Image (cartoon, rainbow, N blue to C red; front, side, top):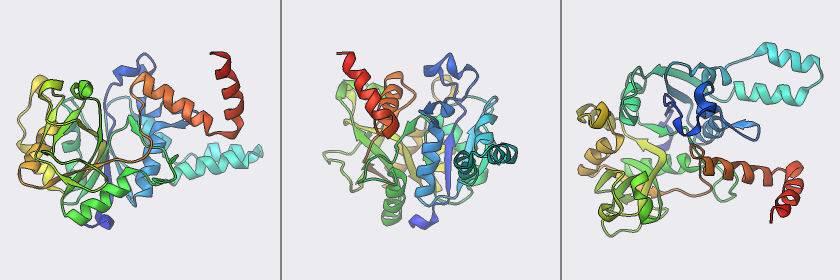
Length: 296
């Protein structure tokens, strides 16, 4: 599974965005902006930097604005040019050309595993990536300009197996994440074999403090594992259950993600992303720092 073979990414975007209500009542959470750039734009830029060509959105009713964002809007471009706004016109055209978008529907909210399985007809027998729509890794760190998907894709090719991104979290937070069991190993930038995965374990029973973040590269065998998963609470199919089945075959590795990460689905994560983005903008950094000093 060489890096060049990863040509598709599945981005599940069918969720209700309950953590961001009431805004997400009418606007998909993936279009919530960091300054003037939607979170989904950061994700797709990371996807493109990893050499991935096709974005498969797993959508639901009311999410067509995501497809529209990456579609061609010649009328807008023409109007901007007529008004002498060449820079804005080029910005819009660049968005139109970022990637090829394919959409499939998840007609019932039956879990992340079910959402990935909905993309199976498009994936076929190929290796593919998965990126969650509320976690962003903007290219602000000079050491990781391409983001984690490029690294995970390369590692998956080297290992000829699936590789998922993880980060270390405080033990009291394990109940908010999928957690990997890697025995006594320490997970760094080199992939480590995963023994099993557990969905949101209590701190006292968590097998480690390594939490699964929203970046994965899978071989097509994960789809067979998902088809075999028995639905759990609420009839949901958990991706962690399928990953655990993959791990039992010695076919799953974990690698620590590098660079800045923001969980934009949480209000604190979203505010941090806004502040960091503003402090990196030359036109905003000075005035913002001056304002923040007045709050002391």
